[in-house]
Image (cartoon, rainbow, N blue to C red):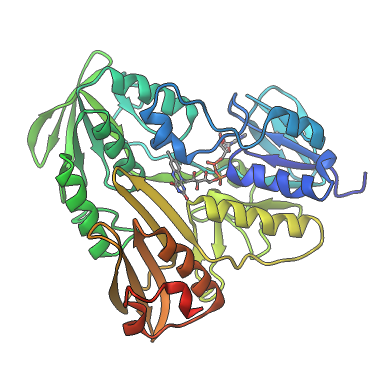
Length: 405
Ligand SMILES: Cc1cc2nc3c(=O)[nH]c(=O)nc-3n(C[C@H](O)[C@H](O)[C@H](O)COP(=O)(O)OP(=O)(O)OC[C@H]3O[C@@H](n4cnc5c(N)ncnc54)[C@H](O)[C@@H]3O)c2cc1C
């Protein structure tokens, strides 16, 4: 074992497991300890708001079987959160009292659900959705409820709303912003999403001020929307997530809307790396700091971290992409939305299928696709290659986007 051993990874989510997988693929699994606060073996998170929530029989989709961790030589610590980092001694302290020495430490602690300051988090009929325990609880609450109020029109709120509607529930979405998906998609796409959800029978109210939560015992029974009392059967909070960086900030690592890392995923302590939703990283073209919550970002940052850990030095320069499934909508985004520029619509095979091409400074920078997976895959390749199709020609549906590569 050299002075850089062992490698301790904190957090068994997408990023943490991808770090393990990358090291195992290089035959270096025996160097690795994976510390998970959850009781489960690491599992895929996206189905939690989709198929797992809809189908009460569906099991968690594990990233890897237990036998894979065993055969790779990776030691997995389950149901044991990391509680402190003693940087001077290079020790990680676990909740159980165990101390793990590390040569390198990788923080992959993800995010936690944002809560409302005026609403008690432990009410019987109020739910958030970040992990498998939340999803199992929400499954049971949905089964016992006729009406679901979703607070927040972001991705997770809308996915839960669509799933609840598919289960036959009456659903109301309350969003304080003037439109849905305000931070992540274009106004045109947001309008299409709004129209589709309304057509499916979901009541969506925009620009609503919510407050005056009324409880009876351990239940929430009402809230005020724009000053008017609404009954509550089940309330789901979909008001975003905050980076889980307490461990890092307590240890004195630089944090600002996430754990601050460089393009090699190094934190302000050279022995500690961070990856995934918990990081604030420099966007390669502009250098401005970004924090993304996506499987792509978690996986690709993990790959960059493995390169750093093994001396290969591959900076994180991956193209951001994301997907969301909401009832009949499969949304896929590639690239980063420009602040301004022009947007063009590329029709798909039906009214329900199209892509929006975003050009800024004369260059294609982002493509949003609705039920158009081939356009999305082609857009990723175009953006990665820096191709810049003529806007008018790229909007001609008779020409496959991939033909512009
Ligand atoms: C319901 C839901 C649906 C989603 N759907 C999509 C989707 O459709 N498409 C998409 O691209 N993205 C989706 N995402 C986002 C995606 O799942 C995340 O971006 C991804 O999981 C980030 O990976 P991560 O490893 O950084 O964090 P996570 O997967 O959140 O993992 C972090 C892990 O660290 C653990 N942890 C935290 N602190 C400690 C500690 N002190 N000690 C030990 N363990 C700790 C946590 O318990 C957690 O298991 C969804 C997320 C959710 C919650």
